Length: 315
Length: 303
Image (cartoon, rainbow over all chains, first blue to last red; front, side):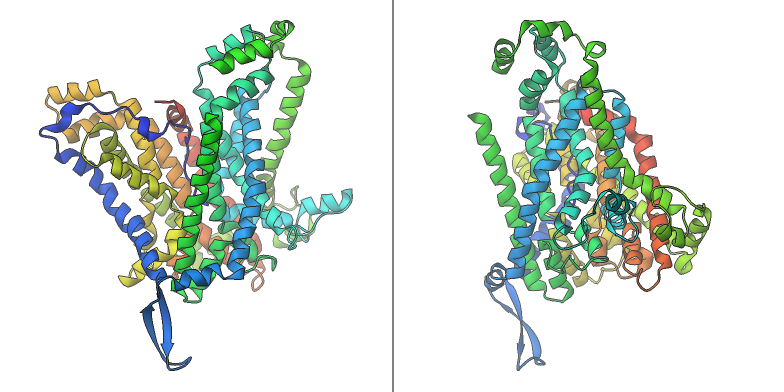
């Protein structure tokens, strides 16, 4: 998951105060000088690859004269997309991450919200310690987080499975029926504190006299949290939601690591794993078509989510 | 504001105002309940880390046989020696590679983002909003969707399996530009820029001696988060690199982990290696935390 965005609570860029005009005359070169160093690599390593993936996805490798014939690359239009959209395993992987997201994202964000509200309230103690404790998992790379949890799921090594067994019976965390939720746990563990911090930072920006006024009027802490803080947090929650959606569709590291110790994770477990497997098999065109499809799905879902939550906010 | 009046009117029985002021007078029960919940979650967050620390001190045999959440024979130093000796000492280069990819990549990336964000916030020119929309679009492009086409492009110029194939794509941070623009708009006053211009300072000098300093808390935030993102990046090096001397530590540990069935001693080594690899990130966070907290707060303020 790459979701690096932080401080997502900041107001939308469109509202940035317009710069004063007088800078026009002799300073025309200045913005160019400041922008080029970013835009050259941005074009080379982001825009060009996106375009290249699209171009690649329109091609197809054919062998003329049987399986051992000469390889030629031909233009195939949208054939690869037909292939991808008709691929039951790929569609299965998409369905899997959608189910995953529908459960994991609300659980994670609700937990992050509750933690942020508690740490911002007057009832909690030791807040500094908790804030740091919750943020620790975010500092641990996904590979290592998955590796650690793999051990904690493994019945031969895990103290947790031991304890659960003594208490009754432990579920088979690495079995195929549990695997998706085992991955969900790793993701929740890693990103809850991160999301909490974004929400918490947004709360810090609220002037405290609003709360004072509410308290004067006799509002309880719970009422303040629910009726004042949560509405204020809406933009922060929407943005953490969007970034979680992007992250979920990109799920790769955790399943890939767990794949090395469990057969429950197939080579097409998530859309990204499916694309990676295809590319490993040198089928670049179809892999590219998958990547493009996935990127489009990401756009559609994030914008859909933005629209949906935006409309609710208006009514 | 209607929310406020709502709250006051509809949901405010008078008598609760007694407990209103704050802290000390909250009911003991709610303090216990809230703190109890926070403790439970803290245990969930910290237990795996504690387990890792304990595991790294054990021998391979004890890892399997002894109770996982407590120490047995203390073997940490033997494990460390073995870790740095394994495969002709490949672990140390992995660690240094990660530091270089993440440290230098985030430093360069932060500077480029700051310059671009500053230009987008403080200069008016044609196409400004268009450029900014393109950058925002870049934020939404899934990094994993870029890895494969990047591999193919680098293959075209015969540059896969090099340091640059992992480093160069890492310096691009559209999100850093987005943040920089907001921070620059909020923390670099136009009056100050005008004053500097009137005093005859050039645009470059104004930026490097003045604006950059005003933006520095924001830049620490951007640096830190880009550092974490690059440090955690897994797919790009996995796709690009074959030479294990170029691996970042995450990829190295992953390859060890997937060879455990052939060489069981790799199990304890990948655990010890995981623990060691987390140390630099923890130090970075601790050293920079006072700065990035300031940046985070600034980012959350509505401009």
